[in-house]
Image (cartoon, rainbow, N blue to C red; front, top):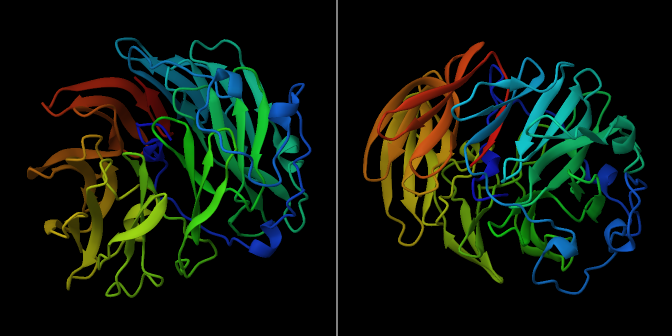
Length: 440
């Protein structure tokens, strides 16, 4: 994941993210020798083989090692979906529509702003086609279709294999992604694999087999990847070499539903900080555990409160690894306290109280966002000051330490807006619904 913390991508459909289903390890485990039978372009031996054991250590990645580098965009660029079609907009220019076939449900933009990866889904079958296109609309490519996803692994009890999550490796045109199985009925079953594809060339590289990978977060330098499963944290080099499995293990969190909970790690100064909620989130009086992992794992805090709800979508550890945000119940039903805790000394501040939703840290580790009340009343918090109301909106993403993007308005009538701490606001595009990603 890049330094922009791409896990903050905006889900803008009406309502929250509803997770259903179950991860069934007995249906997702695979023998170590199983290699996905899929080739999109003529592979070279170095990029088409999946190691069956941890390869020798690789300390750097480069173009020659299969991780092409990319620069950073010189001007703000945004790729977004609206009514199922793909659009792009640059600061100071009008929006441009790139597709008109509908079904586009997700989008990622490379750090240099040159390449877009986007997903076209069949909502009835829960299948996906993965595409890429240049920001200017040229060089459109179908990377993986429904049939090629299904061919990755034996389906066993599933009816399809489909895309789970995706993100660009920092400063590259390499898209990392993992997959999940699709049940005929409800169910969320992640394959815990790790795959990559070069969106420019179509070169497909399976990095880790199902059961060896997990949800992934790349280091800011793009050379290492943290892999989280419901009960462990592992590491691997960005090219799939030097797998360090289960550097940290912990008890999985009871979700009282048919899915597993994956905690969200944060890279900070070469180490990873991982907040793990208490095993039963309904017993918030029991402490959670915050781990710091740098070669060895150590406990750095045991906060008492709700670490589960606020990090289902967004990291709760600040980018500098110094602060933790979580909720604590109060006597008033439906309300919580927003607690900010220093991880080096345990000092706590109750920043606000109400019906709250966490919306993420800013890159300077002092600013943060949350909603209060309806879920659309955005607030900008500041460790050094009082909260600032931003009005009705959603999907706040930090462009840099002083500027942020968000969708101002109400469901069905959004304005993609660039704003700054001084209160300046620049409307970029009108959207009825959709998601967006950016590069600067």
